[in-house]
Amino acid sequence: MFPKAKPATKARKPIPKRNNQNHNSLPAKSVKARRAADYYRNLYVDINSAIARLVPMGYLASFTDEVLV
Image (cartoon, rainbow, N blue to C red; front, side, top):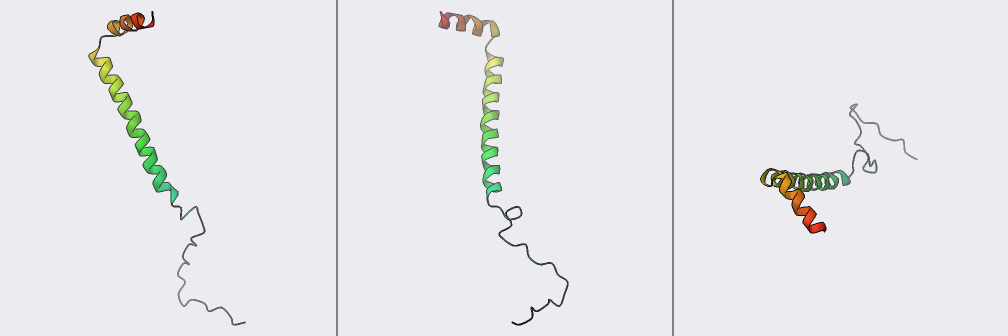
């Protein structure tokens, strides 16, 4: 057939979309999911540390013994 035309400049070719390593729609979603998981994990830790500061440890131990019996 016809010979392929060569570009006048030595510019780089665009990266093909089928290359998933460079063009992937999943990282944004996984980053959002990771941030949400981190948020809830940190919230859980914050709540537990706030309870530990507010409630004396001996009170919690005696309360759990009564509940378990």
